[in-house]
Length: 446
Image (cartoon, rainbow, N blue to C red; front, side, top):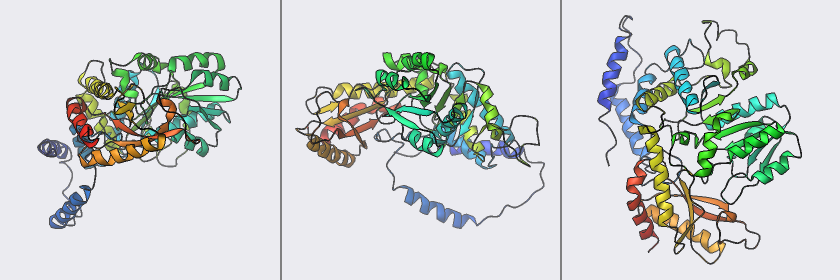
């Protein structure tokens, strides 16, 4: 395996073109510590960076780590020679325009033409903004999310000093609609978070049913699609996920993370609001930031201040190369990841040596080795995690409710089990699935 270096020649050509745009400036010599010392430091850094799992390789199938597309790396690097700041137009004129264009393309993926939205540092900040707006519109009212929703919603609610409650899940890790309806009947709910791809199992909450309840109880719906949002483009989803993504444009706000399936470097999140009028809630004064132009400065519709314009440049370049279209190259990559997860699930579903929790809705699969007790299964999961790593295959561990497995029962008050989790978000995982399975079986001595 050799890391990509051929693209550096493309970067050099692009730098030449960028440099030509500033050729009218007087010559000056930027401060420099010297090539020798710089080389020495970078070589030392390269050695230290070897102490990582091979996140970029198909044999890494553990956490939600997907390498940026080469064009995203190059575009980010190119923009960093200027280091624009997308808070105010003074600091990032070109990249602010690129951000608006790129975010418009993301919103169009959900059927939105009129909206308010921008990039941010990641899903946590994006969800913070969405729930902050929700709290401004429904002050003091409770926020509901499923038991499998990301823990950030509980933390964010605490930061915003808003009540937060968890709603039970069904055996597929989705929000239980009956439990939700029962809680809504008690009143005082301002927002329901629908998770469009949980980070533990990739489960998709039943959005259509949640929207029906909104019609009755009048709460806001926030779609946390940080992980799964791009699957709105996939054509090989199951019934529940397909039905939920079909209705995602009816949510009041949506969060999506381009630095997950969107092939971007960290950190790049995005928050969208269906009603552009929520921009009034961001109104604030600055004695110097927003007076250079009558145009909208992105900082005027964002809780964050300084943000890297390089992230917008990278996203714009990627979407320019790989448009967000059903049936396109980008969408096919998502479909391959889901197909890989289904292939993995079918291969271990006999129940003889492994037992999956349930069929994957997106591209995440959780499973346990068979055993006679919860403690034995959990111990075997941890041992297998170490054993597959010795085979060069890297998975993850998770602690999940036993309800997700048909044959597991509570023991001595214990209602969770340690399981293995595979995130098959790289398109190459489909081609590498036979190799992944062979190494898993070898590690398990089968």
